[in-house]
Image 1 (spheres, helix red, strand yellow):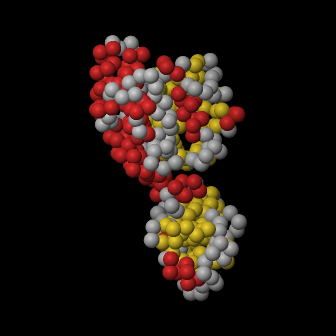
Image 2 (image 1 turned 180 degrees about the vertical axis):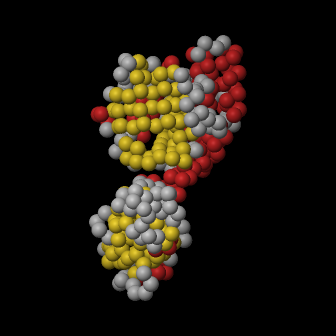
Image 3 (image 1 turned 30 degrees about the vertical axis):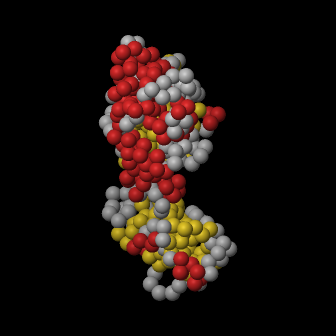
Length: 361
């Protein structure tokens, strides 16, 4: 049973299409304001799109052309928000039992289901407590149990770990890895770790549109958008594919391991046959750890040299990450000190062609 949605919400600039197979979890990534929460609201029935349709298996959730609109409680979807939003007057057990009880189950059946899911999220000992007696991590565990007890066909998660401290988030991430296995879900997140651990597919939104999509590891190891590259900790330059490399937007040539459509990568590869990709849009991607920093242009073997001005210096593990505009380089603290790097310093970022992957965008 697959999920398919194509929707336009003009007021929020959203115009997307996505599909999710049975048993898959899809991570939705993107900067603030990209349309991630709007996408979930449309799927959950909390927002009416201006145009489009959505289908969950054989059930039409909405179809603006046919005038079909299914109420949120009839969709088979459950939305888990950033805040747990538990009923304060009910016990933990009754909070989790609310979904199956509302679906027509007996009180005994609903409580048995609730007990099962509390055990699944390792919160059975909290059953008699009220929400006010729970920590943030405990409340989110209960919220996850409540969502799963409703037995949704599609589980929608809106940054469920963002309000938790790093240690609690790590525990809940492992829990979600287990309970989401084999379940159809869409999770909105800013965390590359969430995407890698919880999802099989990724969609990157930018300004309400799909910037790129595909298997999670492929998107994060071979990004085609600046946002995905930033999440993966990589530098990305966009431009036009050319023989042997790429001409970046702005006119600077970039040499690298070129992969035209249908051709393997190779340093300094010649242009392929017509239609193979030369002349089309492409990206050059390389790691900050492969970049050397100089105060003056270097001499020697052919390399890519990018002149810039330091905008930021920040700790990055046992290295210092030097940012100059859109590019970053990781160097040792000793090197940074010896060069006297500071915001405003003119530098040259240098990277060998063999360290740069260039492929169609």
